[in-house]
Amino acid sequence: MHVSALIITNFRNYKKQSVELSDGINVFTGSNGMGKTNLLEAVYLCSIGKSARTPRDKELIKWEETSARVKLEVQKEAGDESVEIILSKQENKRVLVNGMPVSRLGELMGVVSTVFFSPTELKIVQGAPSERRSFIDIAVCQISKAYFYLLTRYNKILAQRNRLLKSGKLSEDALDIWDMQLASEGAKVIKTRKGFIKELAPLVEEHHNFLSDEKESAVILYEGLHSETIEELKEEFLLALKKDREKDKRHGYTHTGPHKDDLAIKINGVDIRTYGSQGQQRTAALSLKMAELSLNDKTRGEKPVLLLDDVLSELDIGRQKKLMERIKGYQTLITCTHLEPSIEDALGDSYVRFVVENGSAEKL
Image: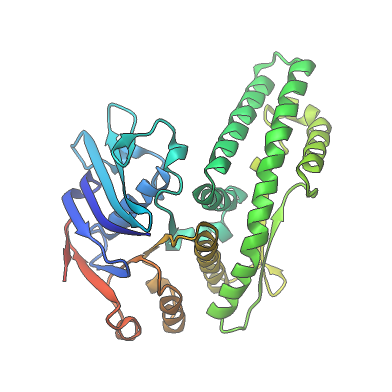
């Protein structure tokens, strides 16, 4: 799979732009603030339905305009497809797949699979547990629409339980009902996440070993309920909810469940969420993303699109070359202020370059 064309109107600092993309490596160069990242953001938006940079869709609309439009044309082995997203300051966003409106965002998942990485993705390692849960959930949703709907159901039940806890009109029988539903869906969420991490772990280890010149060994572990089967997880979850019920009542929210779980990331046995150096954390975050790329490819049998935003400037020359070696065979969109001669040599004739200036991208 690859994106053959990106067409945007009134998106960020672009008035109107159409970019025909290579199925290999596409490099967007230009000074900071010219709009390079906005192009990657547009592709990502059509992949999962939201921006990687802001939760507010209206911020994506060009200043003083009332609406914006982003469209991707995609070529797959099974045939061509398209995704179009229309943003408005007055209405909810509209999503069209192959020209047909979709009422549920889950129908967008997997149409255009992407893996996005930028320096801010260090939050996967450095940030709060919610950042690592988000990394897992976005990755799994792109592989499985069923997981997207499962997670949506769980979050709705969780919100209902929390509203009941905050209402002051507590009924033990009502809480019992919500606990059963929460544990039933939550057990499936945890089981799916654990399965994903089990498959991801050896890929993270392999990529990290390669990027660190075999000097470091990476291990990732899911931190949550300990049971393995769905039924056992459900029972363990119910017991935890019962144990925490009085605390939940006092604070007005649910303390236990997959919405509180985490991902441990260890390098040479040290938990780098707390104790890792900046370099270790950067390499670990990149290893996680490269592992996600590999697993998505392996699971779906279709290569996702890799989006690398200003990543090269954060890596030394050795790791830059290693990264370039790893991305061969994947359609990749890279932004950078300039290309080092060593990277140009590593890429050879395998890339297409665009110059971005003031909301305009021109192919060289």
